[in-house]
Length: 418
Image (tube, rainbow, N blue to C red):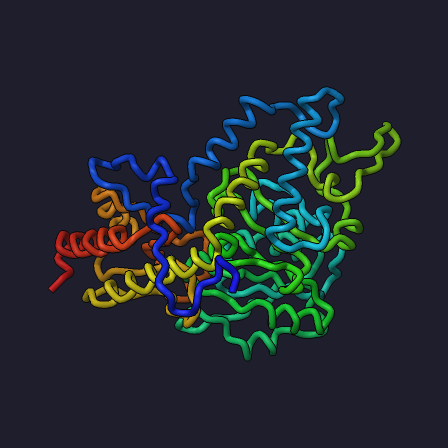
């Protein structure tokens, strides 16, 4: 067994790693911080903060075009980060890794460069009812631009895909399946590999939104068989403003640029321009060089701990929190799929999620309240939003207990607990 693998059901406590994250030691409103908003963004370990700081102190220069030593050194660091991401995803070629600002930009790149230039009137894009807005709105743009049709796979009361409906909607006109691997609003983990195989069997391309997956489980794009995979650095203990699009090399090479400017060209004249090969043609302008370098450090950090161990630790926290919340009267969990990541979304009778979030904040418990950029999910359950606690490797039982105490306090304030 790999040293990072964890036997099924084994308990793993990683909370000692909280000491790696400087921000977790600061009090909030005079209380110990229980940071449970990790699905929105994770905190950053000292090694990641230092990696970005060190780049600006020791290596800062623009990349790819300079002949001086610092430029070449910065280029080596940036391209080394690209190779680190390639290995992390098990992509076949480093040229299949495009740096973007995040998952949202990665999906929009595919929408505007591949889909807009490929789809025809009547072609179908298949998504699911649990998608983040970033995996809905870009496809609506494409449908308006091309005449393609958007189809949606429904979810059941537990927050799981209705697979019979998936099979019914998937057909000869399906040109793209765009699906989240882990729902940010429900925590549902989709077994995407067999769905990808079924989509490819009808000739469709597949994009996977991995924003909520990469920090919690190993990802192997070749084993999945997807054509595109997108994620954000800031949900992987890395910086904001840096993300990744993986795309099959043959697709990238055939896709036109979607932004023009410096770095993405071969030649420019007033008559015409020619463009660099992938991935450079998709990285117009000066990129977030320090962010890419720090993202590579974040990847090293999580791999040293072990993604299987991280997932097991978070699952134990989720199980503890779920049991404690279910024991509270007047509390309903939204999203009860059999396979979940560390996301606990709930509603409390008589308390708006924003009010609940405010009360919890007064006790130092940081959660997310609202629709979580997944308004169709909230419509499906007939609610305006949820209060969402989400777990990371640095959380512990004390954080769970603080969450439950604060919910009880809110119920007492609103007279909802009997």
